[in-house]
Length: 570
Image (cartoon, rainbow, N blue to C red; front, side, top):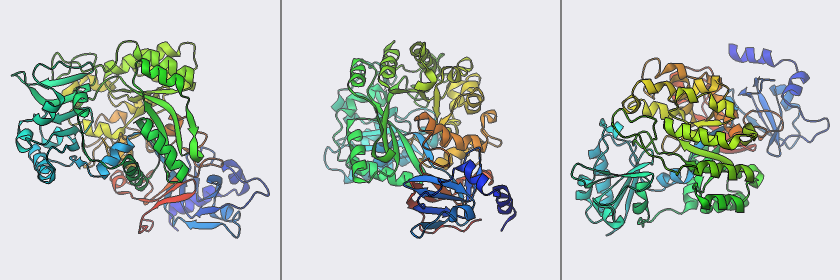
């Protein structure tokens, strides 16, 4: 037994007092269905921060304590699962992901994330063109010109030359910009005289012709023409679920779903096939139709033994920083005269938020630029006057670039900053180019927001970033990329402690969904959702966070993912 485990055992002495603090079964209660023993359990419960074992009955934790104490509760029919000294943390929750988008990549859409040059992208697409039927749409996503060593967005000419007959649409990694070839533009009726739509930009060259780059709402005419064979939505969601469980996720806030996804999630619950806990944000826009939807529908909470909840609406205030669609208070440093895009009409968000509050819905608004964040904060503040803002828990999704004067408003208004740590370590390569050094003071400001009293909720925005939460955890505590750069971290004052980062992926994400009484910590009465890891992420070397493996994912006491070969405790 190593020194740290011996110290943990000493800390766990106290028998009944410990069990009472962590939650013991009532006298005469039924034996647990299963006990998990021999672990290094981080409960995130202040009453007993560390334990060795958990007992589960009916999908809920009934006791947490030492091996001896928990095993004493076992009956003849109780299953025993040894943890082998490995680390256990509460179930990791991604507070902002896109299940169908992740599933589409897993089901055959061309994934361009690893392309190192535009030439490589073209080679990948050329291979698709050779296999395509005449007129078939070719779709791809996740390219990033920063990975190619260039700052400017690409243009369509070479893409059009290699695919003159097949329409091609390739989304940038943020999803807010796409490159279309000439055939796709023709089908959509986009030419030199086509005006920019509200909330979008058709990028044009010096000759006035479209370059093929379509920003935000400008993608609409092309998307309406897309006719491509695709995996069914069920196949996509099930493929995404498999990836999430292997990554150690026990819950996902699916940020922007429609009626088809809602019906599918309910059906998967009915069939017992939805293992993840999904918190849905329905996309309803911000116009009159949105208010009508909220008036006709009511939230659905805890469907299928807590596997699916729908009580949030997803809105957009702007685009993305990488494609210069984020709405800024002052023009982009690398594009004078351009301050980004507003994706809604004045007053629409406040009207929607008021209707949502009246109907018991939470509002989750995408805002990346400092102007967008201020507009959202202003709209929320108008609606929350005279209401219990902390009870409504309106959210700002991304909250990426914020004027320093607006940062304290999150805590004051009871708002949730729903943020994605790996966005910072991806964007740091060019964020200063877009914003200038001065505006970085309010960018990706996790520590400042946390210190102000705001409750952070962390996610990834997958498939924009990896669905693996330990990559986000590493980014949050180091402000470094996977190569360990830059030394000391980028804007290091905004780093979080390991416990702060873990809480944002557990307790904070649960609270953002009104579910902190059910999940986020390991204690009696809560769902038995937890993850078994190959290393102790609260004490291992920072670089080791990226090679820490998920050994087991447990949801409701059921092992829903297990590595084929579990490692020995290091």
